[in-house]
Image (tube, rainbow, N blue to C red; front, side, top):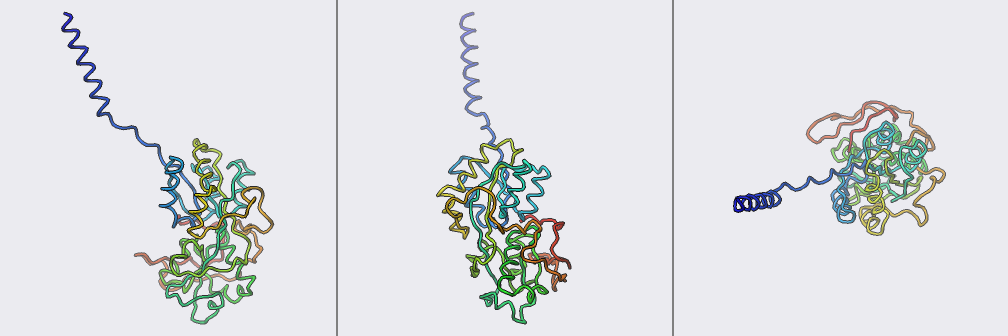
Length: 307
């Protein structure tokens, strides 16, 4: 009888050891969902790897225009972290209790790009051979508001406005020029710095980029660690390597300064264009050709195309 009990005990122990050895590993946590301005698109792989190494947290991105992402968060979209290219949008969401107090993690710059590389300055855009110039939609894309502001300050907006076409975000704006549907684009420097783009003067309202943890997130502590990485020396070095400069000392928090990319929410410091644009030939083509916007001036009701 004793030998039977002993055999059963040994068998039970062996079965438990076998089960433990071959049990399926625990499923990894789902990536943290980050709503990110499209100027971060070129950094996505490096940023994902760096965040994972520094914090142990995996992240996944949903790219789009900052204004569109802000509306989605305001409507309850299940994001964990918001990385905006527009400070005012974050401060507005703070006031609504939709996000926790944000931090400025970078300052964006504008770049000029043309497919053949022949357009080297803003004055080159005045050439009669330049039929269309693409900029992000100022109604919800901070880089578009800055581009319009820059052209206004240089006295070029009135001449160029009839030829301007609008991308839903900086990535789509670049695609318009890359496809040849626009002769040139003014977009985020982070997208064109390694492609022969020209860094434009910062003669516009600053593009202060702010990150904030979404208040409704169940993973706020993890999201806060990701944001802390972005403002750390390692995070800023990574951003700087892609053309996103660190904020000025002491400027990582607080309310936006006067004129700080406010018009990306629909304001008008640069003046709203009065002309309505028609799509150039090739609009809407498939196979990598970026379709152009239909005939309309910027509107806050235009939906985002993602990245």
